[in-house]
Image (cartoon, rainbow, N blue to C red; front, side, top):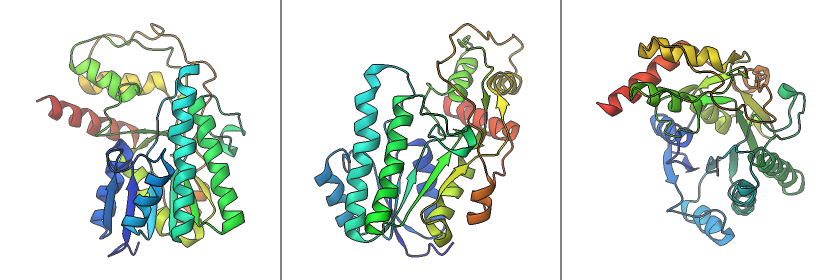
Length: 289
């Protein structure tokens, strides 16, 4: 992928996907400059401009985000500031510097894979607006961008217990009973190392400039089936208490269309769900040892 010696800025590098991406780029020979909130609060336009100016990157990977899929009025402002305002600030800094940017989008944005369904959450709405601004910057000022839209990412290092895999895994390892929705939602599960590889490929592909690419397997497995796999891997013999928590409103299936990523990047998901869940459980088990 020709990363040797190239300067890259990874925002959100202390996060789940960002951490995996920063490590992968370093393995490929890139000069990686990781940035978390302590390095720069991207909600501040001056801070975003200063960060890009100081690093002088060839490519910026923007993964910093306010991740909260709640359907609650209280998350509108934080997700607006953390996902839209921060992204526009970064786009403005990047277009002035002349470098390239790869943005982390959301599979809940309107796209062919979900029938162009309207964003179902404040988080998805902010992400969709950020994608629109990226395209505006390309059309007006020739900003070379690519958007990577992962589906349901899971794997080692995911500590956010609002996500089902770490939540259920940690509950079972502690001997606790998780509260579960009906588990009926079909989900396109994609392993975090596969996602990091997709980002790295997107940042190196000239063919992907101006593209918004789904990153997922293209197949769905219901939440209840994935939870059942976690129960078996951990060795828990009780039945998962599906229906003990309400389903989230406006949830829709989010299957990826992996064709464009395969065509433009040569990427496809490699780690199957059961193997990925086994690796994840092993990571959490070692963390508790």
